[in-house]
Length: 142
Image 1 (cartoon, helix red, strand yellow):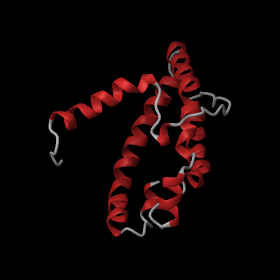
Image 2 (cartoon, rainbow, N blue to C red):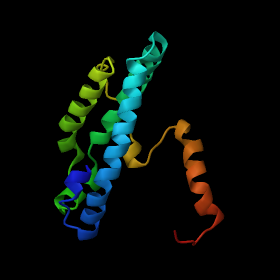
Image 3 (spheres, helix red, strand yellow):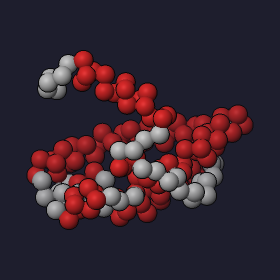
């Protein structure tokens, strides 16, 4: 995503994206190394890593579902359609899972309305926590 955003029609966004690539690569590498340790570690760590992957992977497909906002952003040349990033993302995920001796779960896509601002009751406490500071200081600029 950051690489694609370096080609944004918005020069400031492109500059931010260019600076973000190195930092993001560090975090992806760090997370991948831990996943490999868990997956290729003990039987218990492997079991837990696979269980977490099986549970969470269906939610990742929302990353690549388009909505009207994304379509407008792509049409304006500000950013890519995320669907164009899915194959490369999945290649990276597969490579890491192979190194971790974990199995990619079947592609069961979670039906989600998160990109439309509609969240389940499970998201309520997270949103409340994230919004508490802004509510305590209305009108503040960050």
